[in-house]
Image (cartoon, rainbow, N blue to C red):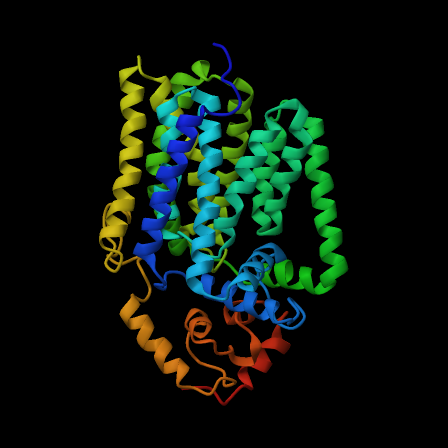
Length: 429
């Protein structure tokens, strides 16, 4: 079958982006400034400290590589408001959807599937849950999808490896999808050289700017955080699998029944490597503190083969029905989350899971009440509220350390910072 041209037709491209932009606005209005994720508050408060000139890893601890903090500090430097930050990160997710549209076109040659890709990339369950949040999982998909697209073409193979490798600067486990892209790239050597050069440059820059404190916090302290219990790992793993059930069914139908119909076989091959790599990152749920939001980049990688499967299997009713059912299940999960964010239930959470699991932590009314209480504290007084509340109230964290979870689970490597937090006796309220 002849290969599709690299970029989608203007109509499908523009229509898909306009639909995606409309959904981005609607999701932003739906989420507002509700409190969903403890980690978001940690990253936001840390990014504000960076923007104010405090030293990352030296002045305060950081659990991740500097990429996520630098991105947050850059956004806050433009406008220090949660609405702006979430809106900008929603556009980052839309960018991943735009890249998914390019991949869908190159895999299927279908205008309709291409036009739907940006919307579906925003409406998978965990993309909806994490919409607009400052986390590594939101920042990584455009880098990984863009890297895979470039790596599938010999002339841009090195650039593809380098772009994908930048995702490691926001979270180390993204080295796994980078390895997958390299292993399945048609020009493996060029892709590996690009990725290797980028990784070496990032490591040298990190050492030059942050010194050994970077590795102490992001590797030593993280390794000391321990593991979830077997029961917790099972529960988190089931939730991951359930959240991915729909996209996996859809993409699996293409892999099993339609792989010979793919319009760009080289991209299809690279996409297999990307998918295997991001699926492997789901295993990080064994580490204490990791939750199922790690599946967001996996969802992003599965959108193009899912839509391509529906488009290419038109004459194969059973696998096409399987692919369509998978997409329908994913959308049903997202719809239930939007309709009932405070009491999330089936089908967003897996059958038998506790109602409310993974729902919104604090609704707007309760959050605003806590922020109002925190704002009654003196501006320089540390607050005992969670980091996200402290961020909205513009109040410092105890001891100037936003990530108290990391300090408490660092295996003794950050005890000096933990002592500083514990000595901050005068807190408000």
